[in-house]
Length: 189
Length: 189
Length: 189
Image (cartoon, rainbow over all chains, first blue to last red; front, side, top):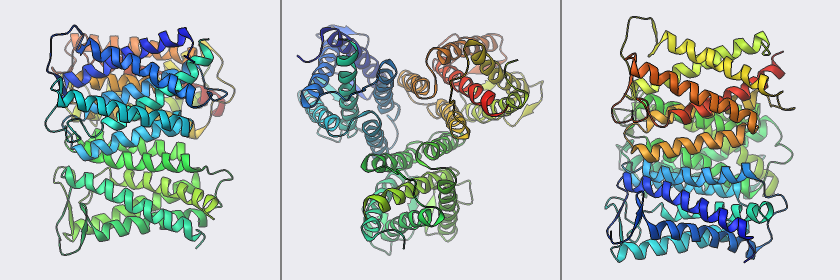
């Protein structure tokens, strides 16, 4: 691992916390429903979801460091908090638009994901991480939907059983996890 | 024309694409309805609307260059994408707020238009383009509404037959088209 | 007072204007209702509310200058407008989300408040002002709710009678008022 142990720990905590808060919004708004309850739940989330987001955060951050060395000045607490706020805010917004028209909601989330990349990403390395997260995250959730583990509401599940804005949400997540990897490896060594 | 041919082509494509995506959100959400269908449609939009937005994008960009030389470092792909994402995102948001209270929705769109100007504009030259776009765009759409070519939903058409947030949307469009003019004339020469 | 008289005047006007616009959105959307009407009203707001926001803006700006000297280059008109747009936009958004699920709405407002701090604040001094505004503002409104002077809608008043996003709104307000204090004392002397 290129990530130092303290950065890994911080990323696990941030990923778990962000996943819990965002997923709670999806559950409360009826955007998603867990269909299998034979596992422990933390707040509104199945424990495996929280673990997956935590590990995914570390994986993307590690990927970022393997793609390219971190930028020279990746920032500190301020930039880390801005990134976390950006992706958790977009996560919340995907639940807030629950009953709005799906097409413009998706356009809005895509636009915000793009803005996240142009403001917090460092070009190609961040783009690689964002696309990896978008493809992996959407594919995994599509499998969960197809296997009846979790369900997206019928009026939003138009993309292989998941919401059409889901790739954009994971894209923004990938940009931010990459940035946190840059910051963490520089500041938490 | 001050704009080089390649920049004009790029602006036409960006304008047409942004117009298509944004207008589709308005149509899907029921914010607007086309009343005359005797013309070709592309996706959800009458072809004349797409052409008008494309030409309007070029016109505002050209206006920007006639008002004042572009700033010394207008940016590149990153700034262009950020601008496009900003205005397309606001466009989508005007459809997302379809059933929200109209006054705070308008306040929100105006605030985002102002933020677009302070972050992407270069002061007075961008302001001139933004105001020109706001006045021309709103006037044209008010004429279309008055002549029953297109219709804004009854619960949002409180400003001369169009939505009260429409000037702010065109204002943000003007800021971004001006910025794209600066970038295009510098990078696509 | 550390604030020069012209800055105090500007802050009073900005605070009153922002309070009027934001409060009108809360009233129009049914987020809040005034229960006592035995006082003069300006537009949708009881006059004491407008006065309180105006004075609160000055108070937070003054607090900022007493906590720490303003940063060396606090910015000018552009940064002031960006700050005003940020907090008025968030204020409008709290009314736009009137019928969305409360948890993700609160997450979204908190994320935007955090972004306001990381982009417009100057670290600890801005944080002190933001926390002071959040605590004082929320406490005062909770008292108004408990004494039946004003009322938050039953489906949003889950935090001591007020909305759970209210501390975040005041937090953003505190960040911006602090920044306006920095700008005002430098530019309006």
